[in-house]
Length: 231
Image (cartoon, rainbow, N blue to C red):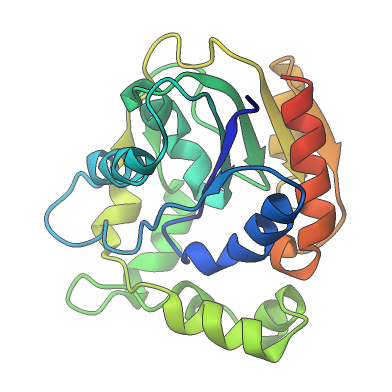
């Protein structure tokens, strides 16, 4: 049996950013899960254990022993090592999609110092605006081609605490004991794709903006299947 695709969205947005791709994968005969991480920002830090718990809880719907392919978008890539180490299901491959990469060793900061300097003035009582509200319309509009999809994605976004971006995520030894690959949409993630290639991972390129999976879900699904097949 083919592995189940587990599409993990960035905690800065929501699961609707993966649903169009999930629909194409299902139509092609694949099993797919899209765990929701929308409530991981509630409570006190660290937040990464709640990410692992959310994925584990969603995979209770998948029979024990069934293999999975983990797919992470954006800063969800930082959580793949702890997700992989926290699952009971065997992981046959991990695909990073326009994603941040975990450190080669040691804890990984969710946000670099310059991003934290950008975010801190935006926080009100420790809570940040929704991700798309950080940017100008000229930056946000090119990520969406459909106004209905845009409304769904924007309304679904959580208002995360600043402490979410201040956390460090562990990188368990041996988490990458399976084939990993990278799907690049475009800048500024091209440097991360180069780092993935330097790690010996397969890298594919589907040109687009950062949320290109909602613009071209069919193309994204095809690339995921191809990358998973080489795992």
